[in-house]
Amino acid sequence: CEEAATDLVGELDELLPNARVVTISQIVQTQVTVNRLMNRLSYAIFGILMAIGGASIASVMFANVSERKRELGTLMALGATPGMVSRMILLKASAVGVVGGACGLALGLVAAYVAGPQFLGVETSVSFNAVLIGITAALVVAIVASYPPARKAAHLDPCLCFQDA
Image (cartoon, rainbow, N blue to C red):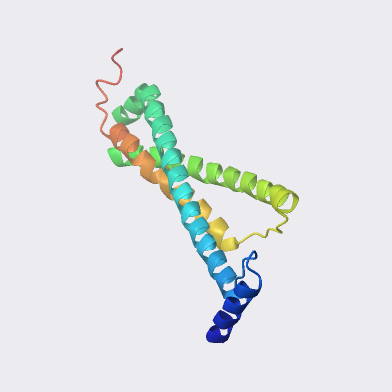
């Protein structure tokens, strides 16, 4: 079949010198290549967005630990262990990650349902696996990004927390 198509393409090229003749297999191969490229690009953009989100969460959590130094010192002076303080910071980060992931998911779904059919002529559907992966990724990024601020909070010296800087 490939040989016949190749021979036919050669004959058509001779008959129609100003036309470009391609086979369906060439078109399919080109489309598969484009799809693979778009898939890789999507993963690259996803990684960049996760890194930016992680940096933002880490920054917010470091600021939160710095602002709440006195409260954390009071908790530790009253008997809170470093593990409790660390878990408290990580729990807050988990809430931020899940809420942020859910909000991003909602905005993405609305954008896909509006932009897909209107601008691209493509119907969209919700993939439960993608939703689960997105929320899980947001949670993991929030926890990983908040680990250094939580560690810093857990190792605060209660005596030094009440000094003005």
